[in-house]
Image 1 (cartoon, rainbow, N blue to C red):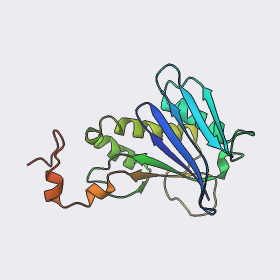
Image 2: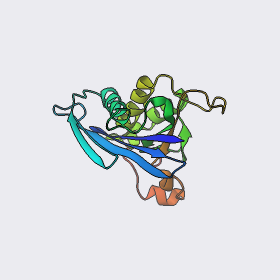
Image 3: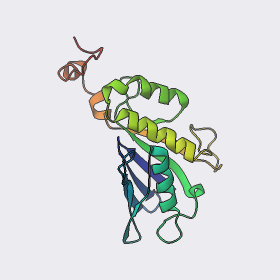
Length: 184
């Protein structure tokens, strides 16, 4: 299975295409300066590095640019997005609601929106990246559905705070977040 991973920050989107069966990275790169003049992508695949300047006013255009590069006949590593079996999104924080990776559903996205205050610089960008990927890959599966080889990509989140969520309450209270309901 081929997996696309996305790590959307406030003004960048990092990506990696990974062949799960062969346990190898097929391509990786970054779109920088999203929403800023001079947006560009740096793409590494097949032992080559390419850099292209392209306007990316939002994460949607950045995701489109990533897809263009990974499917490009010369520098790409797949022929079409149909080869992608899953999309993984790096998400900064799941609060107390999400303490491990989850499949992206509308309810999960709503849950991420509820905890934006836990990561005000990164969470909005993480959510924008998920929404952009959903728009660009409209045929993607957003939840388990049936397990057949139907077209579509399962989209899931990988939470950066997972280790913190396992800490005892006393330890988490030592690192309070402004306006957090956990502050005692």
